[in-house]
Length: 117
Image (cartoon, rainbow, N blue to C red; front, side, top):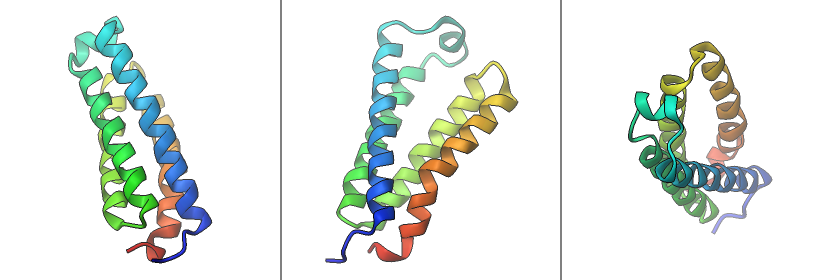
């Protein structure tokens, strides 16, 4: 087994945080949907739960040094990004904020890509 690099550990932690927050958002949205977002995308909470589950799955696979975790993590971020831009009231602001989150989330993964199987 390959030794975990700092970037793999950071990526794993970031996906854990991202996934946990997404699950919290999903549960809150399903229990009490925020009005403007619920009208625009009624399945927002379910998508947030999906993103959270995918992110936590990515975290586990990355911790085991599996590239599949990177693919799943990237897909979970892509879903979150598209949903965020779609439901956001200010599309440009949400696109920029999402891009910043994406850079923070995916940079450690990109740096560790060659070290994982």
